[in-house]
Image 1 (cartoon, rainbow, N blue to C red):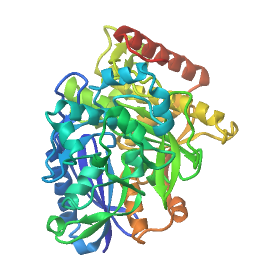
Image 2 (cartoon, helix red, strand yellow; image 1 turned 120 degrees about the vertical axis):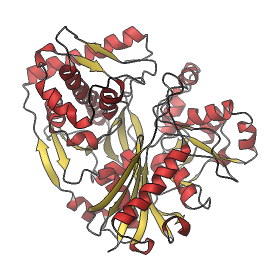
Image 3 (cartoon, rainbow, N blue to C red; image 1 turned 60 degrees about the vertical axis):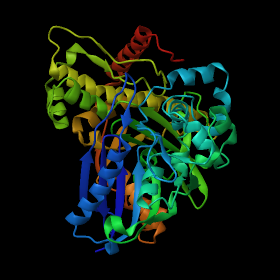
Image 4 (cartoon, rainbow, N blue to C red; image 1 turned 180 degrees about the horizontal axis):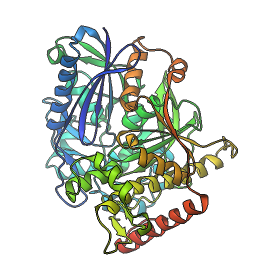
Length: 508
């Protein structure tokens, strides 16, 4: 047997999955690692935890499949995207904990940049908004706060990377300092139209360009994983940020196709083809994937808290022991109470982009209990997704591609929460659209595997891969339109009330 090894390095855990010749997962290993919260709104990872869980799960999955290095054709990597790391070029030792994509510590810096009038040039160059979410201000913070870091960076002693770059550096023993176009596009430092690091953005944030990795296509040569790790050399042939890898894994190759991934956060992408569509609704313009030097663009909406709201029920409130317990609780809830949870624990993402906003619960009564809170938590994911879909379709309608109003809206879903039938049915109900769940839910890892396998000649072309996509279940909307709109207005009122209470900075 021969395999592709997919590394899926996520926000709360690292996973390794072996895919066979038919792109079927045959073995999986997963390991969680600690989250660190030094201050309110700050989120960090110990880089050693990231590395050791990745290396460990790769070895575990090989053992479970009785696979040797010679049995693995290539490695594909997908990763949490905007998380920022800086390490010593000579030793490989990081100079600070990884600052996670959820982290909001640079909110003041971002506000200063907006107030100084830089938002237009940032959007033009990067397709992004000025927000703590992205890597650039995190990198600037590390260079400012770690003693001597900026001087060392200017002297060429320090390197920057997102998680993919860091892992490739470690896997190759420091021989490759590279990234792919999708991860580069999330740094706030990359010119997505011209396909290169932006000197304008680097000057704005005072980032020495020599510390940035080389940017490559999503499928191709990224280096060779060293033999002492897995018993033999294995080429790294595919890399994409997690949401872009899921877009590939969902075979969303045609303009207008939509996918939404439900992990720690929720991330919806719409393929817009070879033209970047600039959002009028505070969505992001990004690169969906890049093959043969040609980028395919996407509109993206990002929700910071999706599966993390269930983790909060488990770890914060101690209300459940396992995520699977939320569905029966939601089913047993008194729906007439109409409890609404706005899970803005680390601010609100698209289309609000309010870094200061914090969470709130509306509609509590003496009868409100765990059932109603669980239902409100799951429903919050559906409401936030509709926020994204409304904005996304408005932008697409205004673009040159337009939108066919008669065409049935279909959302392809994946990620851990997509396994919940109750959650997916509510999603279809509140969207008023069909929700398609594929047979293979490991679409993020599958996307990374296909990129690596395709580059290695092990997997089929893009067209053939798209034909192999297979539906497990379609959820059709069952809610009456009047009820759907009534509930959505209630959600919008709750969000507005939350923003007002926290004195947030949302422009919506």
